[in-house]
Amino acid sequence: MNVVTTVIKSRHSVRKFKPDPVDERVISDAVECAALAPTARNTQPWLFGVIRDKQTLEKIAGLAENGKFIADCAVCFAIFGEKKETYYLEDCCAATENLIIALQAYGVSSCWVAGDKKPYAEAVRTLLNAPEKYTLVSLVAAGAPSEISLASKKDQKKTLFFEKYDES
Ligand SMILES: Cc1cc2nc3c(=O)[nH]c(=O)nc-3n(C[C@H](O)[C@H](O)[C@H](O)COP(=O)(O)O)c2cc1C
Image (cartoon, rainbow, N blue to C red; front, side, top):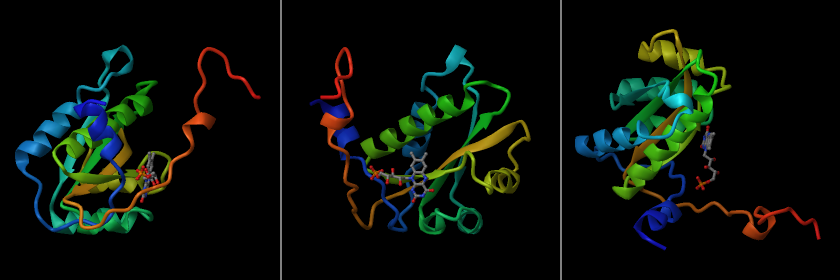
């Protein structure tokens, strides 16, 4: 255990937030961490949106069927990927996770909300005026937590093998 693994282990999805704003320096450091994620051929095929305007948050929430709580978060990040890059999805998911862990390190909770493959991806892109060459990969609702809920996790014995998988 070290400070980084402790932060990773402390993370869980939070969908209820206090109205307090998230400090600008935290936002900018977390986005910097997102943009340091590894990418295939170092293409960095992304565009990050930071949304705090209440009306825009409500509009995004109205589009994302499983992200209604975005309306009441302090800040929502929108991660867009450049469609022409073969690995934009993997790259943007790596950036999304970096962002979430960086926020967590500052005590800012969050929840990943699906963007890729969702029918509202194009509507969110249009709403935020992101250029057409990008597509929405993920939304991250964030803020100070007002409720804690822990998801149960699979037993690692069933999801891990060393050297070669052994069914017995
Ligand atoms: C690709 C992806 C899409 C997700 N989409 C949603 C979503 O649309 N709405 C939501 O409430 N949670 C969403 N989540 C959060 C998961 O529900 C959550 O990570 C999972 O239940 C495990 O809980 P934990 O994050 O607390 O470990 C998503 C997570 C991932 C990785």
